[in-house]
Image 1: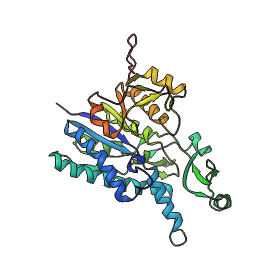
Image 2: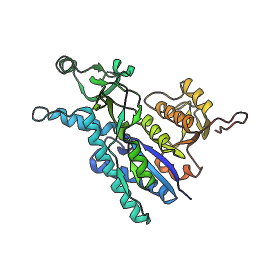
Image 3: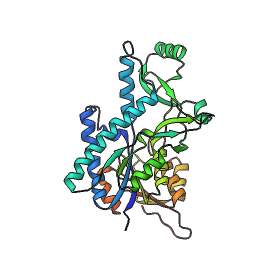
Length: 324
């Protein structure tokens, strides 16, 4: 009997525990903690594809580039994304290889440098909103705007930053390569940072574009494309809650699509937090009729067994599926 298939999405922030643990070695150790739980899932009979965030790591790459720009050329955003996919993929796959040896798992892990196609006419390109890179004084921001064509904005009273578009992903360019590797039993690391944004010219060529794609949307696309039995979103909390941070905060064990949409519309899941994860979950469940699990990496194995986390499930008419 074929193994069940899961896509596990981890965040770039999960590799950085706090401001005192940001080095490459610190991130490798943090990646290892998450990989151990994923390896346990694989040991229990799951075929897994892994996606990941890269926001802090791309920020570090861009900062190094800015500091060195008097001696070396600056790195374009899409190239920084590719660099981070390789570095994070290395950390994940090496940890997994070591875990496979400890657990006597006969598997291989492989990283796919992933491009994600976007629509060059996406409205996001007319309204860049995603801050990237270093904070600047207003004078420096104005210089980069006038000299380099940057779009800049003041960011929460902390200084000025460059902003780029965040278009919706249309298609993962390497989708067939990912499917083929998973079919062959490999553990695939793909879709890092939402993928490197590219668009197609009229001639059909691919061109990189300076933008940031939400990693959870791309992970949802990959999960749907693979026909995953389960889409897992790892985050910093053990489960989803409504009225988060209030005295009447309430954990949710299971919610169906109707409830998820209602909570989303009602403002329970804000942007920059749980909002994109819930939308990505809704899209996957709607497209496949299968389930999404949201939990922390430490609770992954228990949650997969039904003993933790929050599940988002299809709506079953006439029968209430949600449990708090």
